[in-house]
Image (cartoon, rainbow, N blue to C red; front, top):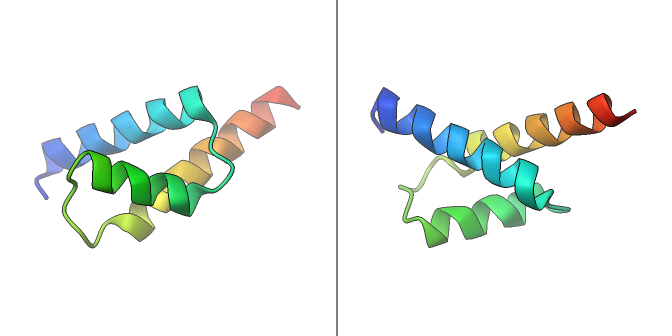
Length: 62
């Protein structure tokens, strides 16, 4: 995946995470990849992005 496209996917996923606040990051990423036709092999990396964003949101609320 190209760097520009890769960063756009990550930023989009971060924004979607802030909006939807998923309970299950793996399931959320799986649905995101399927819905937006993201190439396979990036699920683990994108799951880490979601988990990191959720952690940031939880720490800023506390």
